[in-house]
Image (tube, rainbow, N blue to C red; front, side, top):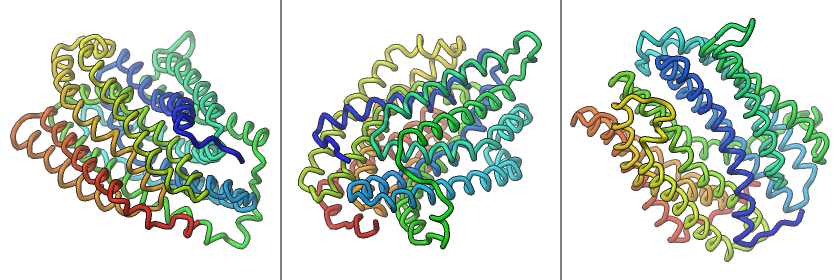
Length: 447
């Protein structure tokens, strides 16, 4: 497989990924917007349910990223048998994980909600949404495996089209099931969950069809007999450390959500609405760093280490510029964009304050997203985990509690703590990359 490895190729590859990731995130955020027109307590119910589900999605994402890294390097070495084996193993692992996760989350949802301090007034709605949504994890798990394979082959436009179809279907399903239409009753949060799961099933069917039609990758039980422990070890050797960093971040955010819940519905909904807006600021950083990781993987496989560094710095500059530019635009237009969701003056005022603090947060976050992806692709996998766990809990959670709860600054104080965490990690990762320590890692040795 031939691949264009110049700087411009990163930007070119990033746009289909951007649209794809944007639309995937929009599936959840459209739920929030449409349910806000139905009921404000329902917004908080869906927001709390998504907070837990995000942990699962993060785990699936990083495991599929590990699959992408391995598939990319095997493509570079033209080892088609190993490509089929790795993909079959990834599909089996994700399928089992999805089923087990669904059972555990549905069974133990009540203690999780109590730990999150979900208000009793929205507990029934939260449980209804979560039970149905969690039941569809396996479909998303399998879908993510196929996405990893398509990205490895640089077929980003294909996954973008599938995401578009899923998103459109989800919007139509939401409209029909949330508000009711004709003989179809208004189902509220139940309708959100049902529509979301149906869109996932549809996406899985389409992506499987395109996989069979376009890719010469075999899915077969023969790759599981004898059981390929070595392939699983290869996936986990990348996925577990990578997942540790991502999971730590999401769990720290879940802990912070617990603090937010103390302040009531106005603050909860402000956080939910601001998070929707922030997607516009950081999603391109996710996209261009994913494109960069594919390019870096090929460069590493080709032994072109001298080109890796300049590709990464190029990506960092673009990510920071776009993220900061977007958040500044959102800050100055906050009354208008937040007004799409609510006319509550308290939420509008608080949201504007949060967006100002977030300018500094996005500088750190865009650097972190890019640097962590780069370090992973070069084989420097464990270091981001150690730094992430220490900083996320000591800085983000610690300072969020200090400023938000102890100092009584509320959501603004919590955001200051999160911004401090992102900036601290950014400085550390930039130093790590500049030191060149990653050059001593041997990712190909584990592949």
